[in-house]
Image (cartoon, rainbow, N blue to C red; front, side, top):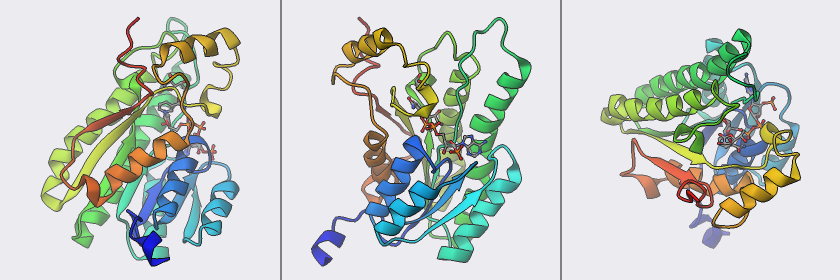
Length: 257
Ligand SMILES: NC(=O)C1=CN([C@@H]2O[C@H](COP(=O)(O)OP(=O)(O)OC[C@H]3O[C@@H](n4cnc5c(N)ncnc54)[C@H](OP(=O)(O)O)[C@@H]3O)[C@@H](O)[C@H]2O)C=CC1
Ligand SMILES: C[C@H](O)[C@@H]1OC(=O)[C@H](O)[C@@H]1O
């Protein structure tokens, strides 16, 4: 057991993961728990599977239901981390939506909701957690799940890609604002990862074949592919990494043709 613990990069840390109920957020929450962390899982419907996964690992877990677009949710997440685990060491701002839609007839509410959940939500939770980390006086790590879409466009993602560029930019600016408190801020940029968010978009086998062919590693990503990158950035292994971004895309971005 002791031998195993030596390899735990987040032993006894407390991690908040927004959107931790499914997809990338669930895989990240579980990866953090596998590395010894206790986890506060934020969700919008239920988080039963993630809770069971983390309990099975013998780590602490608490779920908090709320809309990340509501600033109050951010306060509740910090409160849950403090009450259950005594503080917060790591934030993974992951919750997001991508309701695919064309640009010219984009409904105003679709645009506004995507901004509010993906970008405003990331701001609220980053600010709330950063204030707590500052008061604790022991630094911390904040990781935003941005996207390859921060760097490239998408015809049906004109409301979405600016939010992913926005959260990356948020990490760059907060890295500067929070460096003096020992709080590191970075973003992870996943490529195309198979989750509920793109199930409909990827229901066309031709599109799937096209993606698999374009990706140098020959496959689209699984949620678990993102966990390791997040654990690394959250851990002391990345003690001198801040304001950075890490593409986790199987090589998709660099393959122009
Ligand atoms: N899949 C991909 O290819 C890529 C995804 N990303 C980003 O990764 C993140 C996670 O996406 P992914 O796992 O694919 O998506 P999923 O749809 O599988 O999961 C989305 C998660 O976000 C939560 N969520 C959605 N809206 C809210 C809200 N208003 N308040 C609180 N929680 C909310 C959901 O909670 P609940 O289950 O309770 O509804 C769920 O846990 C997103 O930010 C996305 O932009 C980035 C690059 C690629
Ligand atoms: C939801 C999309 O499939 C996914 O989201 C992203 O951020 C990626 O760039 C993909 O387009």
